Image (tube, rainbow, N blue to C red; front, side):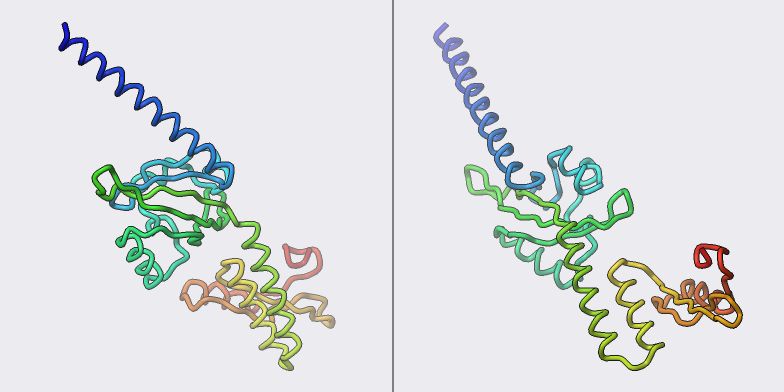
Amino acid sequence: VRVIGSQVGQFLKRKQAEEVLRESEERFRSLTLLSSDWYWEQDDQFRFTFFSGSPAEERSGVAATSYRGKTRWELADNHTEESWARHKALLARHEPFYDFEVSRVGRDGQRRWNLTSGAPIFDADGRFKGYRGVGKDVTERKRAEQLLQLEHSVTRTLAESDNVSATMKAVMRMVCETEGWECGRYFRPDNEAGVLRFSDSWSVQAPAILEFVERWRGITYKPGVGLMGR
C-alpha cells in the first residue's frame, strides 16, 4: 500500500508540475503575441516545429502548416548565399538573434517582409534543443521605404539626365526592380499618326523576356484600343 501510495503521490506531483509548466508556457506565448505578430519554435536542426496559427497565416499570407519541418532558408528568398552562411554560423554557435529580415511571396502573390528574433533553447542538462522566437510583419513599412527610395531615385535621375531614351530606361529599370517585374515598356504619342508607338524598354536579360519585348516593337495603339489605347 505504501508503494502504491508513493507512486500515486509521484504521479500527482508530476501532473501538477506539468500543469504549472503548461500554464507558464501559455502565459509566455500570450505575452509574446502582445508585442509581436506570431510565435515560433524550431528543433535542434533549425526546422520549424510550431507556429502560432491564425496571426501568422493572416499576416504572412502563408498557411502556418507549410512552415513545419522546414528551415528558414528553405522558406525565405531575400538573402544571398553569403548572408545565409552568416546566419547559419550564428545558429550553429547557439547565439540569439534580433530583427533578422526575411521575405517571401505569399499565397496572394504579394511579397511579405518580416522581422524575426530568436533565442536558443537548452534542456536541464544543458543540451541544445532548438530555438524559439517571435516574428513581426513589416510589409507596409518596407513598402513605404521602397516607394520613397524609388521616388528619390527617379527625381535624381530626371534632374541629372539630358538623354530622354536613357532616362526612360533608367526609370523603367528602377520601377521594375522595386516591383519585382521582369520588363517595362514605354509607348510615346505619335501625334501625326494618332497612335501610341513603342519607344523604349527595359528588361532582365532572359531569352523569353527579350523575345517578348522584341515582338512589341512594331505594335501601335489607337485611342480606345487595348489597355494602352484606353
